[in-house]
Picture 1 (cartoon, rainbow, N blue to C red):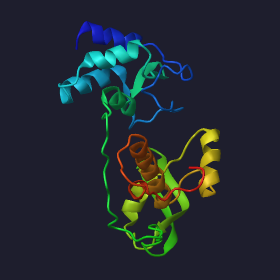
Picture 2 (cartoon, rainbow, N blue to C red):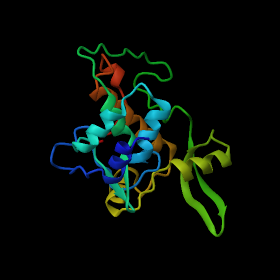
Picture 3 (cartoon, rainbow, N blue to C red):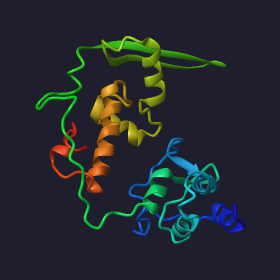
Length: 217
């Protein structure tokens, strides 16, 4: 890595979240997400190692101009992988969009109900050194009978926020301060993907952007 990139990684300016300049950052997250946030220096290394056709100068320029939000978690500077992708995204002048035909579901059918009845299960993983994951009353399809797999889904993928603000939002949707069913997880992820695809013009028809989305999502 060049000295220039190292300097940017160490002294990247923090882009204000409300001044309108961070146009590659659609929404500033309030807490660290290990899947999304990557140290600034590592972001440059990822481009060099895995996308050598993309110029690191473009990311450097976006950071220096405050066009991408730079986070501070425990004194280290991070950028969001999604924001880095937007730096290099070039929208088509006249996007054609995709036509997606229904395949795994039927019109007017709730896909979450199509898997059969649900039942309550207890999830538990002993992680050693006195730590564990435990959740009572998790709601899973009865056909999902692999307890170990269910434990992993609950531990690794259910959203369990620390901040009260997010706990309150989750409770409005699920009745609890955390996700406790695969339907919550799947709905959250698919709504985000479909919403981004719709915003970027990936679909040509309303049918293509259909998603089980509740009012207010």
